[in-house]
Every structure is written in structure tokens, then in C-alpha cells.
Length: 191
Image 1: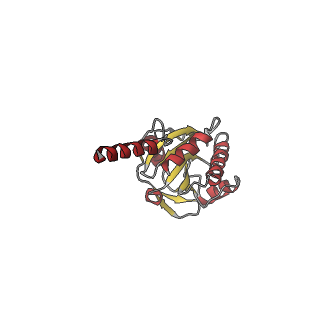
Image 2: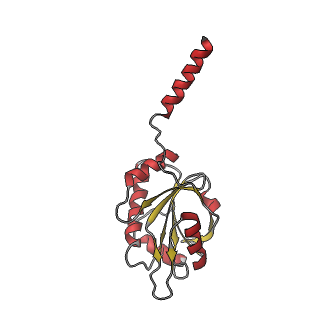
Image 3: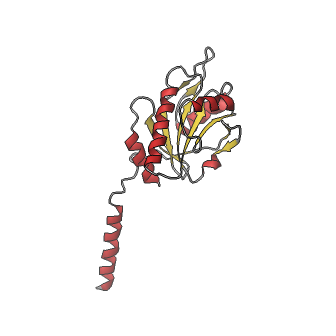
């Protein structure tokens, strides 16, 4: 009788502890491939620098004429919400899709326009155009393409949530209809 009662209590506690832990719906779980890059501070940076951390990534470039400034402003808002919610171990990563133009100095100047906190936001460059196009497609399942003519790189406007297990968990609109509350909830579920 005591064994059954103990077992029943364990089951009840397990069920109750699961209540309220919604988790991330429709998780993608794409593994993040390795990369080597240079930061806006001209320091080496690799995927291993993000091991065990929750991070939000996007793809931008400094000469972008339309979507990148609003995306960066939206990511800045998300960064501030993460601070307000006192969420720890969260990083922000912006991959340049125009690495031959986006030097560390240009990325630093770009970042300063947004009032963002560079303590947990890294802008990356220092790889080839071919690398970032392939990396975006294979790791994040997103399009990046620099046309032969002009200076505007084609790319999608998603934010990507990556878990501490280094898997892409979810993608969100990073441009117009940014689901901030959903993103904060999903980050909380990974804490």
C-alpha cells in the first residue's frame, strides 16, 4: 500500500511540475554548423563562443537600404525586453551578408546608430560571400544572395532562436510583425 501511495505521489508531483511549462511549439531543431568569423571589435569568434547559451540571430548588412535598420531596431527592442525580464545567458548575433563591405569598423559604426548593448550583441564578418550564402541556407534554412549588379544583398528578414544545445529552435518575423511576447516566452522556456 505504501509503495502504491508513494508511486501515486511521484506521478502527481511530476504532472503538476509539468503544468505551466508550455515549451516551444513546433520546434525546428536544426543543428547549428560551425563557423569562424571576426567581431565588430576585430576579434576572432566561433560557434563554440556560444556553447551553452541561448542566442537570437539575424542576417543584416550595413548598406541595406530598407529592411536591415528596422530589423536591428526590432532586435534592440527585444534585447531591452530580455533585460527587463531579467533573462540570463542570452546573446544576440548579427551575421553580415555583405562581408567584403562590412568591415569590423563599419559594423561598429552601424551598431552605434541603434543604442544597443554590445555586451551581449555580436556583429560578425570576416568570412567569404560564398560561405555566408551557404551557411545561411544549410544552417538556418534562409536565403542570402548577393547579385552580380548593385550593392543590395537579397536576404530574408527572420530572427532565429537558438537553444543552449546549439539547435535552431524557431524562426520569427524580424521586420514588421515581430512577435516579441512569443519570443520572450520561448526564451524563458529555454532558461
